[in-house]
Amino acid sequence: MKMQLAEIAKAINSTCEGNEQTVITSVVFDSRKITAGGLFVPLKGERDGHDFIDSAINNGASATLWQKGHPNKPNNIAILEVEDPLTSMQQLAQYYLNKVNPTVVGITGSNGKTTTKDMTSAVLAKRFNVHKTDGNFNNEIGVPMTILEMKPNTEILVLEMGMDHAGQLHLLSELTHPDVAVITMIGEAHIEFFGSRAAIADAKMEITDFLREDGELIYNGDEPLLQARAKKINQAKVTFGLAKNDTVYMTGYRSYKRHATFTVNNSDNQFTIPMIGKHNVSNALSALCVGRYFGESDEEIAAALAGFTPTAKRMEWEKGDVGEDIMSDVYNSNPTAVRAVLTSFGQIEVPKDSRRIAVLGDMLELGQQSDNLHAKLADCLDPQVINEVYLFGSEMKNLANVLKGIYSDEHLHYYTKDQMQHMIADLKNDIKPHDIVVLKGSHGMHLEKVLERLR
Ligand SMILES: CC(=O)N[C@H]1[C@@H](OP(=O)(O)OP(=O)(O)OC[C@H]2O[C@@H](n3ccc(=O)[nH]c3=O)[C@H](O)[C@@H]2O)O[C@H](CO)[C@@H](O)[C@@H]1O[C@H](C)C(=O)N[C@@H](C)C(=O)N[C@H](CCC(=O)N[C@@H](CCCCN)C(=O)O)C(=O)O
Ligand SMILES: Nc1ncnc2c1ncn2[C@@H]1O[C@H](COP(=O)(O)OP(=O)(O)OP(=O)(O)O)[C@@H](O)[C@H]1O
Ligand SMILES: C[C@@H](N)C(=O)N[C@H](C)C(=O)O
Image: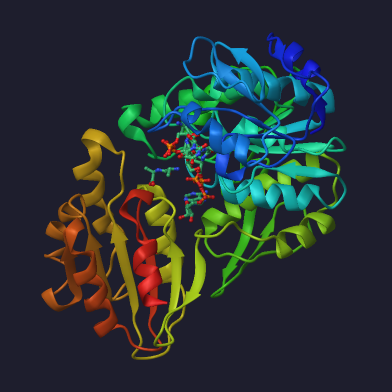
């Protein structure tokens, strides 16, 4: 972005105290990352961003937003006073979005948002100037930041949109007015704050609240909760999935260790993705639908999917220190995602006498259903397929109790959250060079620390 402070002040209904011809080239909420040309946005987290204004100035910030009435207002930097810096950053993002005016693709869903966003932008980049969400900066801070980082020549903006409470996607939809909205699937992520999958589906549909009249909703047609709700909107609809009544459905699938191939109805192409699992094929199908919406050929889409780069920590292969292969899936966890990962992990061929080892950390934010949802994971753990199970965290005790009837003591290992070091030591003793290991747990369980020690 490149805007004078005068233009920014007008966009957010503020006045500029300082040189309004100052040119702003970036908007930054972390004083440690700001450079010359940066507009500092003081946000409230654990601490208050206003307290870091001196650091922002020292690092070269050219101007700052400032909450009206907040004490210690600096006098050595241009200031735009506002009621709430976060709301003003969102307003500025909306203004800049209207100015650049790209076509907007919004992607949500309980799982698969980041992967679908990466696949979709790779597909669209075949023909267009695309700007996409970095990592999973998908919330009320991340979405406006993404918009403000877009280049002026952006033709298509691919935005990941996340939520953990009702109303959040309504805000993001209003902010961005998507031309295309994608819902990857409905699972149980963050169900603690919704109560039911139906309530999650209602909240995911908020992405269509400001979907343009001539826009399109692309959604997982295998999910009855979405089918029922999609009927209520007037915009064009396309479904993807595994069932024959979907607009685009998978007709063939083969899984290898590091990639999978698939075919779809009404296409002669064979598609390849550098990831495994039918859930990732489902993500690829939604990217295919978006590519076709923009007029891309299946050949172009196939070439893009084969070469796309997934974001780190999503079924990412790492090498362990005795030579074992480790699938790192440590960014988040919830029941549908664990099932998807264990199913595809269980299909990977291992040499004779080698084992598949699963290390599972607690799935967080499942609320009252947590005990039951952890216990029910037993139905996707078969000792003939997943040979060793390491469970980590208080919630996983529920699964350990059920697995006692299925796994013998020597193959079932349980650790409380304060026993991570103990678990790492046991894993290091146990793992052999040709074993394969999967690590999956919620972000808050920090299984990345286990990965660091095994690597
Ligand atoms: C309010 C805020 O500024 N918090 C950011 C802040 O944390 P803290 O609360 O610890 O901040 P802290 O208390 O230390 O400081 C307060 C403020 O002072 C700033 N500060 C601090 C120290 C300093 O020297 N200088 C300075 O300027 C700091 O940047 C912050 O703005 O500093 C971290 C490191 O810089 C960022 O990681 C946080 O970013 C949050 C997570 C975010 O929401 N970030 C956006 C960009 C985002 O999209 N993040 C995604 C996660 C999105 C997510 O959780 N999505 C959910 C769904 C959506 C949930 C909606 N609530 C999902 O996918 O499931 C990500 O990090 O990967
Ligand atoms: N379509 C899907 N169905 C079920 N599980 C999935 C699907 N896609 C991805 N997953 C699982 O979710 C994990 C995270 O994938 P991804 O980052 O794409 O999801 P996300 O919704 O963006 O989550 P986050 O916003 O927390 O990054 C994957 O590693 C995999 O375990
Ligand atoms: C980290 C956040 N994006 C998230 O996905 N949280 C859930 C609870 C998880 O880590 O599993």
